Length: 135
Image (cartoon, rainbow, N blue to C red):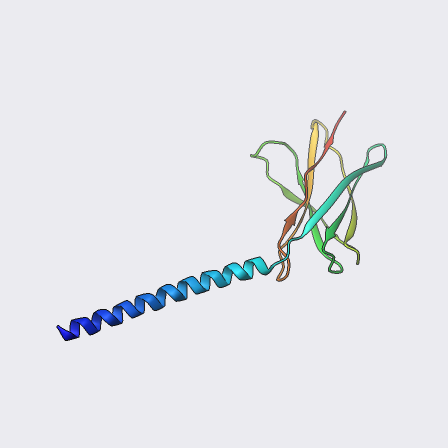
């Protein structure tokens, strides 16, 4: 009888230790995930001359030269996926300019967005979608 009590006491202690370790590690990962700062990407489309399109934007907060990927999508359907079109580097102020092209023959619209990868300090970010439409 006494051995059963001792065994049940050890089992209870191991269960409590396991739960506190599991809860402590999950809260530690939550704190680590929140420790990353949010990044924001502001973009705007420009057409300085007919049929010449540029995307100008800024990545904040600035951390020197940051790599950003310009992604392209050829249709509005969810079946059409985003694919990487160009890799662009920001300047020291976090600004970038990249030339993009309008819709190909037979297409009415083309979609662009800019995306950054997550780093040790910052979370990944995605800009709004820009649409170039054939008139």
